[in-house]
Amino acid sequence: MTAQTTPRTAPRGGPNPAARRAFAGSVAGHLIEWYDYGVYGYLAVYMGAAFFPSDDPLVSVLSSFAVFALSFFIRPLGGLFFGPLADRIGRRRTLLIVLTVMASSTFLIGLLPTYAAIGVAAPLLLVLVRCVQGFSAGGEVGTVASFIAEHASGARRGFATSWLLAISAAGLVIGALVVNGLTWWLGSETMAEGGWRIPFLIAGPLGLITLWLRMRLEDSPAFLSMQAASEGAKSPLRAAFAQPRALLLVFGVVTLATSSFYLVLTYYTTLMRTALGLDASTVFFASIGAAVLAGAFMPVGGLISDRFGRRRPMIVYAVIAIALCLAVFYAAATTSIALFLVFAVALAIVSGLYGGSVYALMSELLPTRIRATGLAISYNLPVALFGGSAPFVATLLISATGSLASPGYYFAATGVLSLITLLMIRPRDQVGIDA
Image 1 (cartoon, rainbow, N blue to C red):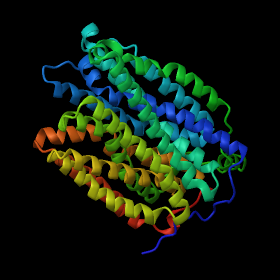
Image 2 (cartoon, rainbow, N blue to C red):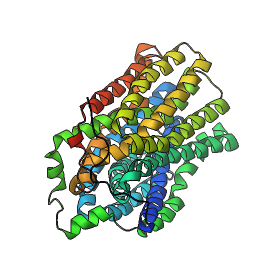
Image 3 (tube, rainbow, N blue to C red):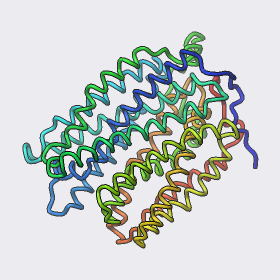
């Protein structure tokens, strides 16, 4: 079975000044988007106690993770709104809107009254604001991926787009540093009493800075050419659904990337703290190390995809990731901490390599006229089903089965789905950026 994974219409050459500005402004905003969105996951214990008090701490944590997962299920709705908007009015203007919505809603979480202050209205307000965050995030990824992919030259597209997921990881790492740093400085008691608000309030000034950076961007050449030639789709949503194979391929390819991403960058922390009983400092350095390692290998994965194609290396990564997902939870179940850390590090590396190839491949599977819409739909659905819900599903599986090994089968299954999808991709599926 063969497949051509180099885009047929890719121009050659290094990045021009406009492309550099586009890259800098986009990734700066993307960093803040994912700091804003991810910091909630690191505060799950405190958020559970403040908004979902219960005699059983597990119920509070599960409730907090349920809200974390719920915002991911709102993301497809955001994608359905912002994706067509980006294909009609442009990537730049849409990126400005989603950043404003995300930063404002994150800042607002830091001001919300708790259950002790206003009772049941508190968790309802939290759910509402968290859903607004999810709505914004649903428009970010497809739009910014289209924006960067359309600015990048074909010879460097894998490397350029790989930084988007690396920056997502960096945003989550910064969130973890802020939360864990504050916990170390203020203490758990002070964090529970209101220190948890600080990471959310930081989003206000950071959002203003990155909004200014995005206002200086120019729209992508591919979009401007399409607009000048009046070739845009009158109804991007209808046009996108007219290409179901492309949407399904993107869906399948993204599944492993998103499940492993949230396993490494969010659930590792909970697993090490609650299942393995590691102390706070060990959990902090191990979780940060795994996230940094995954992020560091994402550009490597992008470079490899530029040199050897997207599909074949990703097949190798998927096979290894399936085995490692099972191994990580097996080691956790046997409480073999050393073995767990070895497998966890290996999975972080493979997750980074796979994730570094995903944005370029999925951008090349869709034409310019519906790219943002198609990515918004087919990226956000697997993120909702297999990414944001991963901590909740893993916690629920362990609670229901009593086995720490049980979530491994869930994560391995996402890898199998992506592997099957990669095997289905044909040369004609990659239409290239200029199409």
